[in-house]
Image (cartoon, rainbow, N blue to C red; front, side, top):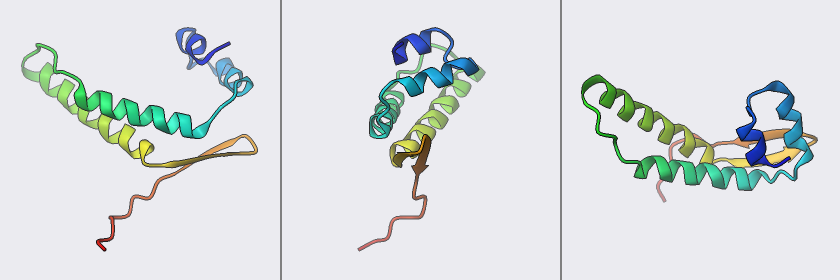
Length: 95
């Protein structure tokens, strides 16, 4: 079963979590997908909605970009079946 099949067959169902482990999982590929998601959110056009719906859409896009960007900046490792994403949230030091 591919990742796409899992996603289309209700990926959040608890039994599907184990199916993912049967596939080859590359943590860096996951991080790369989050980078693409962040870029896609940034490039997303605002639909022709007004008022409160527009504000909600813009706020959700801001949060999506923020969340995807944090994970995209992380370093992922998979050791003994445990995925760890390490993200340095400290301010950048000026050189």
